[in-house]
Length: 191
Length: 419
View 1 (tube, helix red, strand yellow):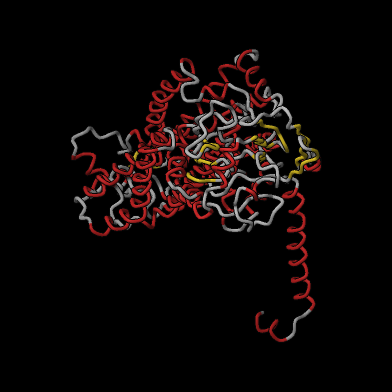
View 2: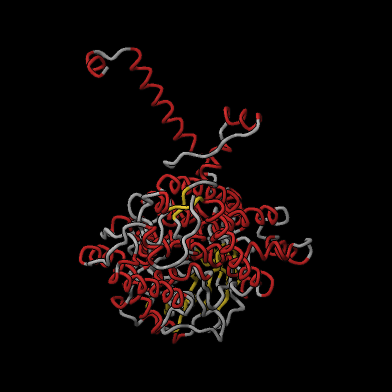
């Protein structure tokens, strides 16, 4: 058989190869809808943006809102907290990226790159620990805020500073900054 | 299957008619009635039957619960309370199912430890052992998805933390891990969509387990059972027929185990769970101290012991997957640890390590707990990767008896009746 087919491929060889290729490609293509159906559906993707009024949030206070099913931390930082965040040398940071969804990944993780110019007191973060997805503590007044005065994740002990940057613990990245813009002086639109 | 002749003789015309067409009674008789069983099996060998029993119990109670449970983020929590309070005997069936999961794992751990002690993974039982590891992994997936269904705080955050393990892939290929996690969730966070698919899979996987258990039993009946001496059956006097000897011993062991099980079901059904799971899931607040169910604690401790996210996840998965290679990591020519004085010490150290990791996994991830978790994690891997191959080569074993019969009679115990 081997010597025969080495000489001249005949009609039967063609049919065998064509049938196998058809079945193989067909099976692979048919599999895709069954995999893709598990991805976020149209109605989930449609929940794109929310508007948040910041007027009631006094300095030192923080609020949590929900965006795309995720908690968003909004903290009106005191001047001391801003100062504590700006004077950290960038080399002390575990994650050097600003993790700001509106800026390129390689943007340094300085405090200004994680806030809006002229609005440095407002820190807006996705409140999900970048380790395994718990919600860090530190939003309410009597929460444990960790060794760096920002947030502390109780699940596996990650400490974030007052700019939401990972300083100690297993989390690999800074808390992410969602895409948002100031609509007015006291109103932001997230998403 | 096994290399023994079935003594099955169809007596009536009807059974003979069946036997000529589908010899199922012949197979059942050959495999589960007069199948040769080593005469020296101890009570640790009753865990196999026990595990089969618990698989059936979980499937039966699970199907009943599915008739009353509502898999939606809005109704799931209340429907479980509805089962506990309103459905006739719902409290009983739900408790059997919840406590049953724990006891299923307890029996599995005893079963695995027995296999490790008596070298039941050694040739020719490698495939039998690997099928066991596959069943164990399927059990873990099933238990994890089942735990999400009551939709309490612990359910929700267990799902969040465990699915997020896959986001560690981001450290290798940025973005891919996040894509995988969103694919698992069907959204940008754990939601009712996630609950719904977990429910579908939680219903499916037990039947997959049942299928692999079938292969596991098949492989067992091809090579025959191991026994405390680790010797093969060499003569008819080494074995007794499975029925009634092994079957009755299984039933007695099962009765004792089920007594303890019943104590938990009736008197402390929530003892093995967490109070936080009676608070409905809240995506905006993580409980201060989240821990998995007790049977996952050793792996959780390994995950937390390693300060790097990706390496922690790799260590956790490899701690289980390494078991697949145990048949080749163990270089000893002696099967049973009974005749391995040096390895025996390391074996108990390994058991202590797993229990210690379980204890540490329940503690907060800070200070001395993390330090000790690192020590025991190190030994866990050292044991499998270094101790097992090296001790097998270096050690001089104790002299083996010539046969199972000799081992039994030398001890002076009365010989069971043989054929």
